[in-house]
Image 1 (cartoon, rainbow, N blue to C red):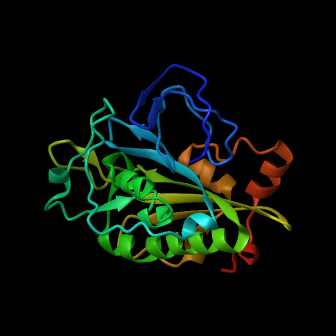
Image 2: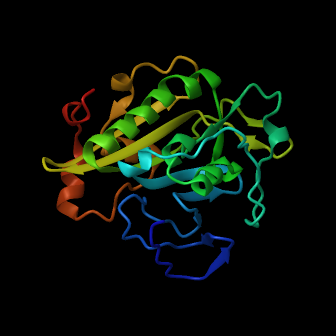
Length: 251
């Protein structure tokens, strides 16, 4: 479990931290906004939106060692995190909606610890997602992230929904908002330098190829309004974010 420093008022509940501010020195965290509701779980941090009943983003470091382990997803199911005093979705919102329960921090990234994997099954880590996207190119990208972590010792990942035109509305009695699309921002640091790449995928069955969904972090920031990897030294951040190349990612 990673050490986390909290720099403002917080509520500590049964192993997770609910706070408005978290130590921003952690490379994986986007710039923290004043109205962010942050929850630090064992393996990842989520900025939760109580209006959409979905995450704004989830962020974590994924190491090579963490891509292996004995934890299994069988027998695990989505549920509310009853420790968190905020409105959340529940299973009835998704049932019969036509949308699947989509992890933002995928369970397979947390095989290293059963509790950490269980914590990916909170609705605070869930968005309504097209089933073919969930099982298709989004899943392909998640698998690529695990390979990149194994090949490079570690990577940093930020994932989240994008709400634009509100084309899909909401589902269930909790009025869970359905994203138009999803993003990932990924940072890799190795002997050849700092490399970063972004992806956006439409929340639909036909989401193209990884190459067609790729973009620079600067472009992703322009679309999402988020500032990714602000803890990097400015020189590294500017160089890594202004452009991208498929070569270090072997795409």
